[in-house]
Image (cartoon, rainbow, N blue to C red; front, side, top):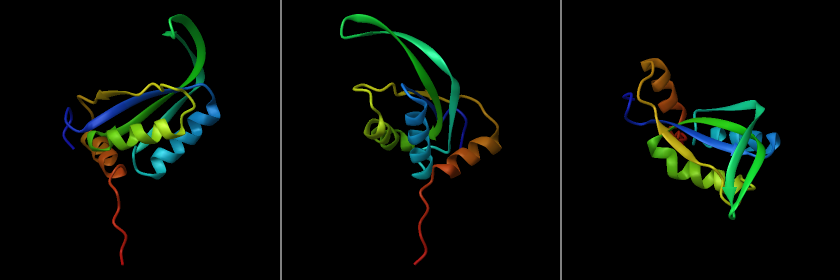
Length: 115
């Protein structure tokens, strides 16, 4: 995988750590992400929702994936997430070690089963 090409970091926040863990496990099991890091200390989010400024404690997921898996990853996050509009922000990985980016690509490849 070429740096600046296919690799992505996706940021997702969750209102509960259990929900964060459930989403992380599902997307890695389905090979939609090679790895998900869960920031176990809550982050404080300040945002506008339905014309009011709100504040919430949330848990941040940092997902490592590929461009090819973004749509399916987004659908899985939406399916499992309790928020009406969950955060789903994808960032291009512009640089990284060849070994890590290769591992990331391999972790997101769907395996063909032998018959």
